[in-house]
Image (cartoon, rainbow, N blue to C red):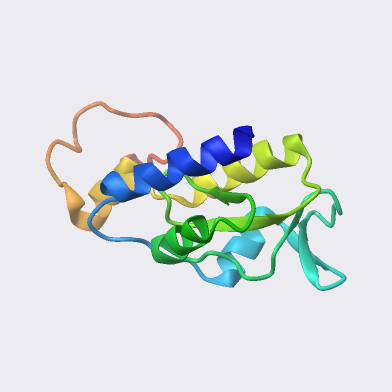
Length: 138
């Protein structure tokens, strides 16, 4: 039941404003990020049979929206809705948490978007989180 509610919330959030442009991810990027391994025709996170996903990965916001609209089972997406997967039941709750976190890691951060030219104002100010401070080195 919680999964259906989450899917609904995500689908409504995507319809209300997913951003101007949607990032697209290759199957290889998603497979690597989630550590997916082939297990008898499906993909599984770290080869765990209780963490299987359908082989048709959701590579962009359009594919995510279409999968959510079809309502054919649980769809896990990144917060920004740019990437996702469809689960194969049974799917362990701890795996759901892990997959959501890993999908979120694929979404660009605000800092990355600024560097790519979406908002070049005030980046020199001290918003330093520490992790990606390549501009401060050298």
